[in-house]
Image 1 (tube, rainbow, N blue to C red):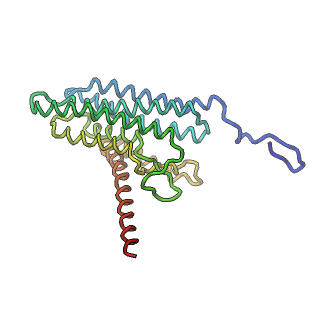
Image 2 (image 1 turned 120 degrees about the vertical axis):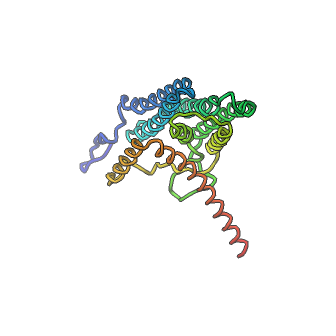
Image 3 (image 1 turned 30 degrees about the vertical axis):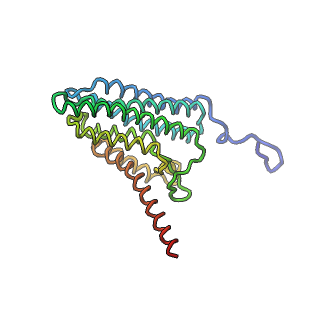
Length: 285
């Protein structure tokens, strides 16, 4: 209640009232779309072969759309003040399916299972078994990242950044899935045929899994809001980025995904170098 000049009380303004129950369904609809995209990616990846690589490409694109849905449902929940415990749990389960199971299966079928049998027979078998293990590790790392995120209260990265700026502790699982999907899409779904290239692919998956369970800082982007006083420049930038992705998706998506991965590595190295210089300066003084 609010008091008026005459001392009487009046109800709070409509803007401060709690949202209607129907509004709470809106973020969950995008979470459901996230799950649907993950399920579609799994079905497409299972149909992919060296002769029909378009299925791998469709799976990669589905994961890319799921990343978009995942960002939109959180944004809507914050803008409409409809965040709930149910929504958080549903979002975590969706992320395990879409950004854990789907990309790990796609990574295995595209990068290891499709290797030709005729050439490099012994190497192929070894890489195939390693691929199964590493893709499973990726899935475990992603699930562990989600579990840590759910139980953490104001987590701080081991290499803190600018004060007052929000960061993720470890690479978010949607970004990890984006790395895998962007590489597959860059190749238009055409699978790896050389076991030696599969070893490089194996190392990338393993490193991505490590980044998800690390305590390194990654930019969260939570300071970006359409509710700013002058959002026109931000809207124009988003439209421009969307146009570039639509026209040159193979190049744009892999640059964004790998660029985000590298940004976390560079932030860690920069912090380590800064700490080393500070220790040396302290020792000299």
